[in-house]
Image (cartoon, rainbow over all chains, first blue to last red; front, side):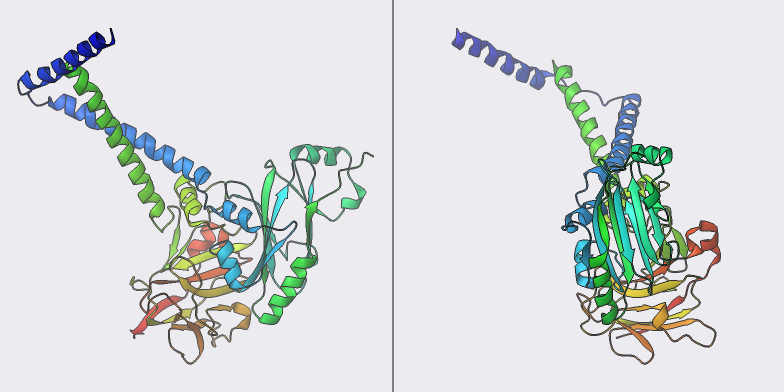
Length: 216
Length: 199
């Protein structure tokens, strides 16, 4: 039974091969068919092009977010003191600065970010997964050059509006729809002494989950 | 029978060609160094929309590949020069004079880097200056020399490149600047980069 099935399959395969050999030379496809084919190729290419461009940021393992997330190894701020360390973590960082990276998760609790650095320029940006800046500021925008920031999700922002917390006065409140953020801190430190100072300042800086809000 | 073979083959060819062209052109677009929404001032190129929700998809894809996190609007703006003022590519074996006024910013830095943004291994020679550590010319303008060998004046060393004639880039990072807004950017001036000679 198997043999006969095999034989008939073989015959049909051979038959089709014979068909192909015997078929006379076909005439060239009409111009209409050709242009329809080209149009189909172009349309498909266009769709693939757009989809690829839109998907690259999601599937690139070497985008800014992924690199920063890999480099932010510590709880709290991970300092990048030397230009080489900065370079290894993220390309395009200013060599005259000391940088700090911190993963900020605000799904369950607000996050508190603080820094005391009054005498030199510094700036901070919060990035979401797609590398978009959610919020950024510099030492002039902050009060007295000191940073006191609370990053909250939409639910906590709502709670804050309903029952303002007394101990949050003077804090910068940032609301974000993204549960996971990365904070990047830049401290201007052109001289070796400045680098040491910036390193101390980052070590003393805070980046941690805040205690949940108390009900008034 | 032949049609039954030819049709799938033709379709397969069409699909393959479509995928090939589509992905090839997408790859080409992300390889291009210049962002689409860039603003040019002489040799200097900035992308104020990078990192904002207004960034176009091509710039996003390009950034995802280079791995940079652009400065936020509250921080500053980076301007990158890859050519001198007459359009020739910057090379590590040439002497360049960066001369002229700088835009309004509380602080800015100028650094010489490898073409891909990597730091140059210049040893003890400096590759970056900040605006607070500079002696300005009489008119308040900038006068910096980029060269592989020591020069009089403010000298940024380009000797640490991979090869002696590697392509390099100059990056001016402006901090706390009104230059983020496109209208201000189109009005402001950046220093010229003139090639004096090559070694």
